[in-house]
Length: 240
Image 1 (cartoon, rainbow, N blue to C red):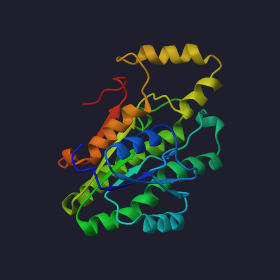
Image 2 (cartoon, rainbow, N blue to C red):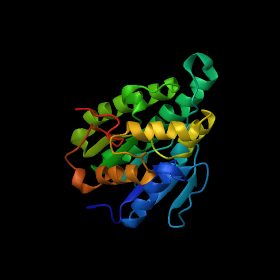
Image 3 (cartoon, rainbow, N blue to C red):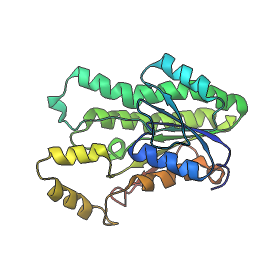
Image 4 (cartoon, one colour):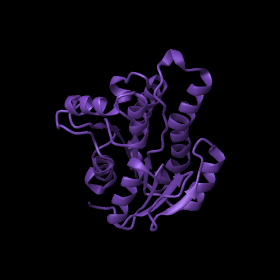
């Protein structure tokens, strides 16, 4: 895609699942990739900076070490499927710290450099749980809805500064988090088949499906796109 070769991209949570797929695609395009994660990525060509995104000072140090950043993908996230009335404030705070505050920490440290240089692309990974809700994911859905609103607000604030911000919302995607939920549901294959039947395209998403959308929004081809929310869900959710 246009304008990715030679650029520097930070990908949070880039060591597994959707994040690892995004890192792979950037590397294929000749992008220098810096991974912020607690665990090293499988990609030898990526720069790994061990970073707890819930720690603002740690994020500041890693951003400084990464150098000038052209592209930021806020992908890191965490969730456990639990009915809301079976959760407690400590659980809420952990979900919020990782999924919302962590994203804000990275944005707050990376965006000033983009504004100073007059250019930058940000893709925040939210979820369709933040658009339509998801049973058993109340705190997570709240965070992802917050990311959608945050992205739109920052897109408005920074539109004249050359910075473009968009959101990608994965639907049901084959990740460790989904697999953990399926296994805990008691009849994983039956539930997997029910999900497959509900998706018009006829299959669950793959991490690579999300990566394609992220790379497009990070490229020069998306220069006139900002403040948008794109679902990558195989048609499970449709908004217009």
